[in-house]
Length: 229
Image (cartoon, rainbow, N blue to C red):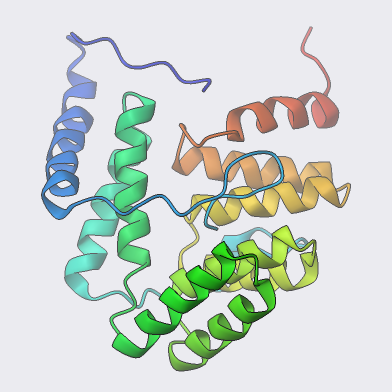
């Protein structure tokens, strides 16, 4: 990662509030439990889970569908993620966000999601997509299903379908750093380094500790803007 942990003793009063916020959010994370990481990592895999011609925030208005109490948690978690002092803290917060976005609130959708996860694990991607289609038909605003399907499409090199799902996720949550990172990977693979750089910088602005994003940003910066003198 390109970001170092903050020093353990800082006298700067401007950093006290973020550190207190982080401590409070981590307490919520620990008490609420952590979701198992369901994200593929590496160069050819985007995290679980904006159109190419426009920034995601301009393509459609955000449409939060979470209950008010969860929306409050999400806002706090995103705020804490920006000031997380190290990779471990950032991962805890990111996992908690995954857990919230992965909660459909529908027993039928949860059952189908479990079957889709099993199908994807067994490399039966056609079945997984079919099951996710059914989930999204039941819950059209369910970010968890949309992001999972986008990831499967990406792994199958179906960039058009992956971009369509990424667009839907970012319309509902423009700060979804995993989908922003996925957008960057797709734009890079399509040869649009400028938009790839824009997307990965947006992802890092939300989650400075996002695995792989810092390295990608450095590579794209050299290609798009050249080396600094």
